Image 1 (spheres, rainbow, N blue to C red):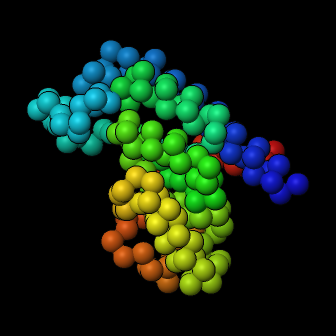
Image 2: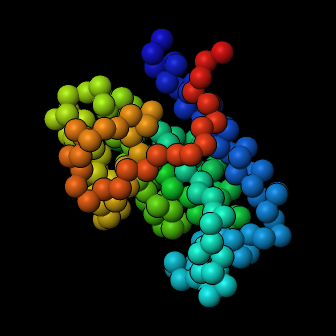
Length: 184
């Protein structure tokens, strides 16, 4: 039953993320040439794009809990077609067997971050266990991409000072919760 719940939550998150990405595309279609860097830009922005990103009105698309063998490739295709980059916070247990998808994320220019190895509330875990989950996922992602993740999004946003075991990682939370994990 627990696995069915996890799968249902994951699929709900992916569907909502796809809907949000689609809505953003249609609402900002005219502005997307200056708001988003093209996938093939190599990270080099024109001066007007740099100025656009220097203001206070910005949005970051982030996706947690992946990769998923079916939905993540569809999402990557949609982002690529629209020239949009996103950040993917990956769960280590979901990476196994999907290394080619992680490599595709990197090749498409997306940022890959750490979401722990399994989806646990890190502030309720033993500090050593939470730190090992983070480190194990870092090693796994680095082995695939050649790049060590610099960003960490703890599941449920559960984090405290005792968990500062991840030197040189920036903890990324959120300022808008879609409540897609709440059961009704």
